[in-house]
Length: 504
Image (tube, rainbow, N blue to C red):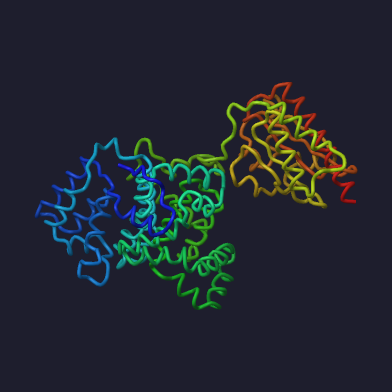
């Protein structure tokens, strides 16, 4: 069972603990594999194909074959090679020794992470194995077992996966700070150390080395991949850097790419992380981004047909959702309740003279807090540039993490142009949504799904400088909430005037 001991906080302590973790296997699957290994009519390839459906057993056999005292200098790169080294009798004995528990007792976090690994393996097989046919086994097993160090971690400490999902994917918290807080060491460094300690296939170790020890090449490749609309310029940049060009074409990179695609898609198909991995994959394959995305989506759908299980999340489900939708978003207070005391306190700060704010960020943070305390659940504050040609998100609450990166061109929306022309307010309701919804940017409609929305532009010296957008999770907004919103934005507008006078 998972450990209840204190969490280690050094690399050596983590390796010692996770090295001793025995992953469980479903009793029915263990018996099926044991019987298959005892069947002399089956070839090694047939056995490997059956075992791949039970990643825990595949990892156990590969680790056993690659132990440092096994007598082989090079680790086995595939399960067929591992079975050949072990012999079927010893392999059957090893499978028999694995901890078997009822299928329904396998921890959900472990099942979910292994599903991500299977998705990665399908992406690798579909995108790369056909192009590198002689290396298909290395591609397949490397991509399937790349996250194996994390299997042990989430089994020993199952809360880690949920916490990482909610904070890194949902809230956009930097992964490094969360890992330091929870583990005491960077997660990728731990994975690299375990991959080396277990003598996992070289491609897995190479992948973690790139992510940990030589990110320079990866960052340069990502920078070139971003310019996906100019393939000729991309090729010229690669030709100018032979070291980067040679590294980019290494077959081992397919393992990292496949897992990057699977992990990022686990959260959101349209998030920046997914876009980066898709562009880099397109550069690696020398395929346009649109075609690359189509191939990736096809492999995701195939993976879902092969691997999806009730109670587990597969990102192929989200392919039929609105494009900007994501499974995890910033948690909001539900149901949202007004906090009168906090609201008065924040409004008092906004009305204070002279302005207590040292910069615009402090002012808008106070404004966001005041709006949230008034009982509104989703809030977005955007600042207008001097020419009114761009609106940039400054503060957000109750929205996905990527909302804070939003930039809008008012020229593409008649509603935004009117709100920027002079201070004003638009209250969308079911009665007028049909009239105005088509005039709003699609990204705003995705962020604020529903038929009830408030948009208010604020000005100083007659010039609009800020746009406030808020709602109540798309539900009707009561008169009390409307009054609170009106008073709050008046306070924000006063604060903007006072702050501007102070700056002058």
